[in-house]
Length: 159
Image (cartoon, rainbow, N blue to C red; front, side, top):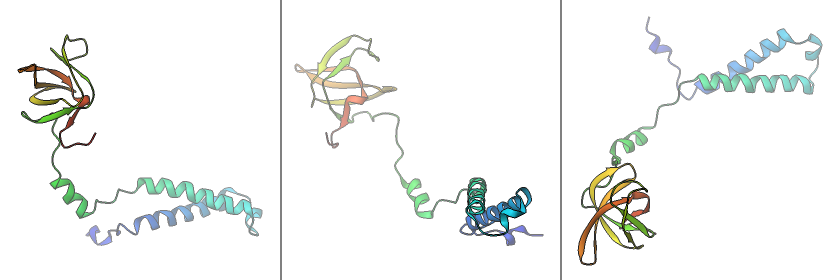
């Protein structure tokens, strides 16, 4: 027997879940409450039906499989550029605020110099977490060191 013919359309599944929750609430309310509660409509009966349907509806909705992503979203994910872990060698960055250029990675490493806000640095491509090795010109000579990438901005990025 082919059960694919009995597949439920995705738009119908939530309606069925909430309908089943309502029926389940009716059955349990009829079984667990005194008959006198149901002889005429009252606020208590409405609260039992509303609360039970809400609880069972949320439970059944949570058990439903998630809806597949629309094809446009899937295509956008497939064509989106892949983020890299660090900068490409030769990429240029602007220093966002005064920044310590260090001999090695980490705040305990010796400070080589302070790069002023607005200075331009070039990434060498070497990284260690948030620490990037960069090269800049200072006092007429090239200086290499490690800088926290948290203080670096792309040249085209706004302040």
